Image 1 (cartoon, rainbow, N blue to C red):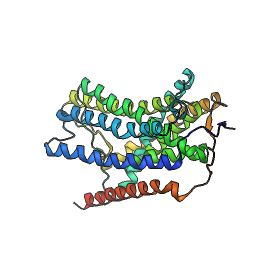
Image 2 (cartoon, rainbow, N blue to C red):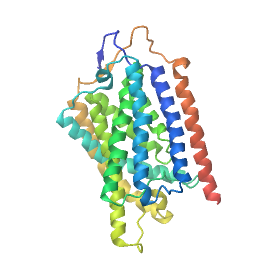
Image 3 (cartoon, one colour):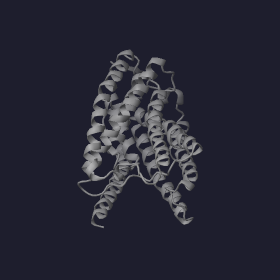
Image 4 (tube, one colour):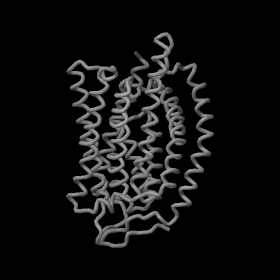
Length: 339
């Protein structure tokens, strides 16, 4: 049974507040991303060119902080909430963090396999296009990438989704809160190619935050996932540099020849299958040792447990925006086949 914070006077993020915050962040992200991309194009800067990597990473770092980090902080401060209490700024035990680390490492290969399977499905519709990501060729760029793509996102995105949005939806129960916050997390990335994997990641992060009652567990999980992705990209660049241009290494799924995609899926499937057992062992152990630690919020005075359109309209508007974006990407996939 969940332990509840029973004081009806305690202020918590509301569903309307969480949904409104989500819509604001989504609109800001779209607007700022378009602005940054436009500035790069205006200056004739190729995002994937290694010479522009540092500028792209710095822009990403600033955007993460301003667009994703600041709005939830303003919301909590303006609402007079106890940030430490609401966001779960609590210490996690060393053994808990170790198990979360194991979940993140083993889960990475499960996520990679989900990505590959989903890509294969999308390939039947058109030609999926991976999000642009700059080349990371130097140690300086690698460190900056870790800061901009792993450290900062792990802090600000967890603060938003597991610190605020998950708390708002806890009104409907832990399971609903974890799943909804995970789905919203995946949709905000506006990444059709990796959508199922990101949703899975968001749900698992929500689970460890609730079980350990610590936002730091979620930040660790998130950081490790992104760190592994960045590290593999950097390693590919190093290997490519040592082999020379004569032997090309595929840096993302869309560069894998169709005849090798099935083989790649089979190999990664075997690795993922082996990791599933280890991942499940970590989850089971974490669930056991955190028994009784989980604490969710109770209803505030005057707060009802059911859904209402008044509270959900910002999420509905955000959903329409995301669906429209996904439709545009699907049309682009189909057009890529026809070209």
